[in-house]
Figure (cartoon, helix red, strand yellow):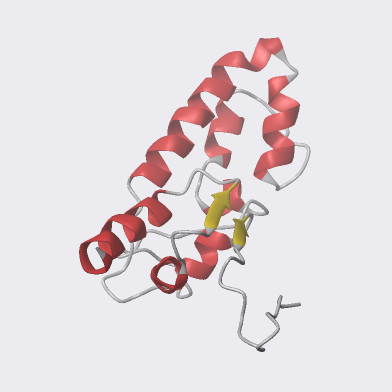
Length: 142
């Protein structure tokens, strides 16, 4: 609900907090692929869709689910699978580091352009696409 001043104008001291969570990267790439044809995935199905399940075969690990967060939590508690967890971390970081945002404006671009200096954007994801959109938008919004 908006705060209205006595003269019915919108209270400009109002701030927006935008939270991005699971699925935000997928929304930024509605085709399902980045600029170079690399597939994006949500956490559910992430491991298999992106081929990381081959790591599990090498370590004779049976995943607890097809959700990356649940699998990682399980691996984190098993010291004997430390090397597998490390390999998975490196593979995931490399995968997301190499994602490239499309040349066309995305939902991230539009969101960033709509924010004011009073607003706050927070994310629970490590998302290089958001960083790329931010850098792109900075060039035209200064």
